[in-house]
Structure formats: structure tokens, C-alpha cells
Image (tube, rainbow, N blue to C red; front, side):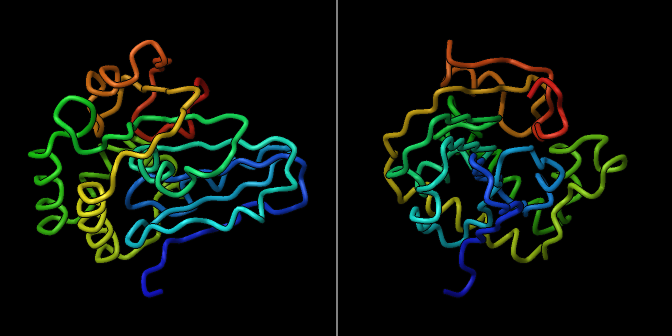
Length: 210
């Protein structure tokens, strides 16, 4: 398929356990490339221009399976893995309602993001997402063409509107109160008492609390 969803094994060493990352919009595997965890293979999905199911047969032999959805990846994970059985499911800095006035990013802000992206590039978004890590840890930034990121966001907006809410159980939710992408109050609106609040910015994967 043209512009197929990316599926990438970061670590595939025959470890007994598995972590699956559903990454956020605009990302690639560089976001989590530093997270090699002893005993875990690592698989990630990103670039949601054409969302598709993942072949679950490749996961069956793992003893312990963890799914981590980050940002728009929380919604995407529900679409991709709703039939999968994970031992742990963790949502970070996102909700199943990513474009929503009280549970996600308000529609007006979403529209402004797309307009700013087309006129000014992705630097401001990256600054809001990664903060000072843009300078101190540039290796975590995605290595993607801006055109693919713009197209992905347009397609995400369409798919979020068109696809029904997927019944899915997140056993843990982490909300970083330094998040400048998903309004913290809206995340807490949705997650309620399930939320664990940290000091993390929107990008969570260099934060020791996360």
C-alpha cells in the first residue's frame, strides 16, 4: 500500500517479553530508540496515514506483552490492537478522543496546528512537544519529510472523525502536567482517577517518572 503504516522492530533478539509502542503523530522510531530494556523485544508503529491491523501471529510466543500508546498513538493503538491481548496497557499524554473540546485537543487548536504546519514548518510543534530536548537530545527527533507529516495529520483528522470509538481497556494512564500538546485538564477529564500525574512534558520517554 502506498504510504502504509510503519511497523518497525527496534529490538528483536528472541527476548521473552515484548513492548509495543504506538507512537504519536509526526514521529518515527527515533523517539524510542534509546529505550532498549533488558529482557524485552521492542516493536513500534507510527505514520498513521493508512491505519491497518498488525499481524498478531508475530507476538504469540511472548510471555509478557506491554502496549504503550503515546499522544495520538493512544487512539491509534485502539484501532490497530483492539483484538490483541496485552498484559499491561499504558496510555501516556493522550486519550481515545484526540480531537475533542473536553477530552482531547479542541477542534480549533487542531485546525490551527495544521495551518501553522503548512505555513511555518514543524519547529514550533517540536518545541512544544520536546521542549529543551530539541537542543540537548536531537537524536530523538523524527527524521521524516514535512510533507509526510502534514499528510499524516490530515489523514488522522479524517480517520478520527470517520472511525467509531473502539472498546479498549487502558489499565494505566500517565498525564504529564508539562504537556503543551494535549490539554492536561482535558486528559484528566477523561481519565479521572485512573490518571497518574507526572512532571513530564508531552514527550515522556526521557523522563524518569514515566
